Every structure is written in C-alpha cells, then in structure tokens.
Image (tube, rainbow, N blue to C red):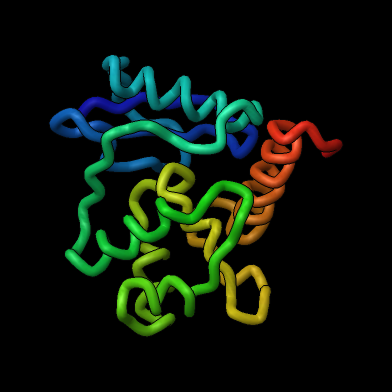
Length: 157
C-alpha cells in the first residue's frame, strides 16, 4: 500500500492509501514512501489544516472497521470544525451507547481527517484520545480549529 509521511506540529505522521482511498493516518514515519496523487493531495490538505488555512478535508476515505464503527466515523465527519459533540450526542445519532461510541472513536484509523478529537465527555471534559500525545494532542487540535475559525470569520484569535 502506498504511504507518504509528512512533518506536522505534532511530529511526523504517515498517510496510507489503498485502492484510491485513504485508509490510515498513523503517528510516526512510514517505512515505505510513495507519493501518489491522492497522498500528495492528503499531504497538501493536512499542511493547509495545520497552517490554519483549511477546516475540512475533501478526500476519499475507506477506513477498515465494522459496520457500526464506520457509522460512528461517518457521524464524526459531520461534526463541524471548531465545534465539539459529546459521546452521548454521537451515540444518540447512531442509535448506540456512549461507551460503544468511545470504543469506536479509539479505533479510528484515520484520526484528524476523521475528527475523533471533536468528541468530548457529556460534562464538557476532554474525554480521551488514543492518538500520539493523548489529551495534549486532542487539546492542540481543538485549539487549532478554534483559532482557524476565528481567522476565517475575521475575528481576533
């Protein structure tokens, strides 16, 4: 499977493609590097995201997971940048329990692009984050999105 690594404020990440769709985003540098047009588009969109110039992604995604996990991940993609949703709210949307949503979140193979960082606890707490750096990474991503939105709306950051 082709993969391409890039430098980000969170360190190196690697994006993987399979059959014309993004299937994974992993922390660290991938062993094999192959710059396909799709992976180059993913790299460019991720750089624009981290530069505060992009708030969403336009990439074909095909995450590997159960039907339930894919339903949860689709619901995560509908959470607008710069906003959060509770595990309970996502659970209601997909007809499940918050704990099951949390487990699906933790198994998200394409973090950042599938924005599992936008899901928080019902009491407003951060909840968890399984990506590299844990809650510090989650807080960084949420702050980045809040700042990006304030810039695009023309308000001071």
